[in-house]
Length: 184
Image 1 (cartoon, rainbow, N blue to C red):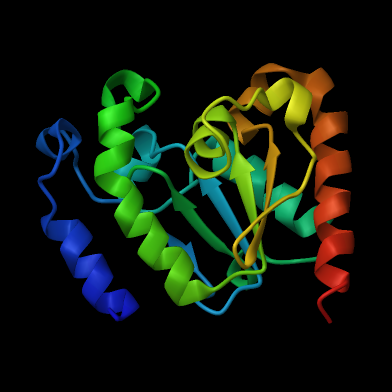
Image 2 (image 1 turned 60 degrees about the vertical axis):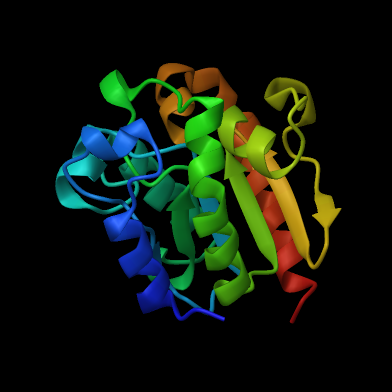
């Protein structure tokens, strides 16, 4: 079994896909390594690539507000992405890029051992829950896989472009808050 530091070093040296050729920084993930709640997005954007931290741009500011709205702090949760390097022009990561990175994420999940994993957007949900998932129809529904409860919801960047979807995302977060209480 690897430690989080060993896993981070593997990621920093990774050259398994073409995204490694254009990255500024690997965006490994951050937060409480003993968190009950983990958020997983699709991949780093421009600001994340520059800073080497997940969710630090406008979408990250919204994610912080979402976390605070359920009475938690960013430091209470763990935040990661399907891919650890920024796709060019912030496009969605391609299937082979996701596949190259998924083992890193699986190890992170194994080490953190969260109770709930919130899949932020379709890319995360398709890679972690079901490749055929339809985020607009299946968001807000818990899926148990192994020891983990997964719940898909809208990505914060989608919410920035579609204000009307914030109400649905809020309902999803309330379900997460309630489910977390059931573990106490």
